[in-house]
Length: 256
Ligand code: ATP
Ligand code: MG
Image (cartoon, rainbow, N blue to C red):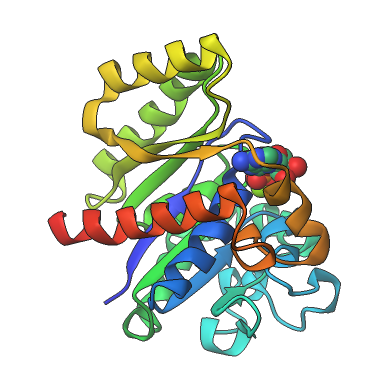
């Protein structure tokens, strides 16, 4: 049975998509069967996995509207080594179209049940909001991975997310837990980042992943080639860190 994780943080541009596609590629690299679900109408995780969002015949939108199954809508990304349930602008309409539907926040969860045995991991890239789309992700998942930059307001921004996760846990999904906080775009030369990193550790303890993802330009360049950094330049420091993170995830799961 697949373990299902959301990569979420309502703050924009913190590294959610970079984390999702590189963790997916890293897990594939260490032999795991992975499905990557793009829940963001921006479709960045789709494009960043070598799948053209403009040419999707079916997408996660069709799955949420129950006009397709995941098996019908997924695309195999041969280059990346994992399957992609893609998204594009169409997905922005789902929020409105599902407004009168009962249990609309459980649509993705229901759809995932059918493919749960085909994968070891399902990773869901969430949009930068706490919207119905993110709620569908949180209702489907066993846990949340929170990428964050070690900046001054980082802890403050976490409060809203932690509260939302608590509410979803209490009302909609008893399985949901924060699996961990991932420090990304880290630059050890910046004293403030080191300080915030220490604060995070004292506040959240072992909920902070051991692996730290450095700021690395190869990770930023990779999407323009339609690849995760891990595939685009496996030797880059950032890529190696993501493979290390994949291994840490596999190890943590053994203990969950
Ligand atoms: P959004 O909220 O818009 O969905 P996001 O949280 O998914 O954004 P990303 O798109 O992953 O964030 O990253 C934001 C930008 O930072 C991108 O240009 C990405 O290439 C760059 N970036 C992410 N991680 C790193 C890193 N470790 N080193 C250098 N650049 C990075
Ligand atoms: Mg994103």
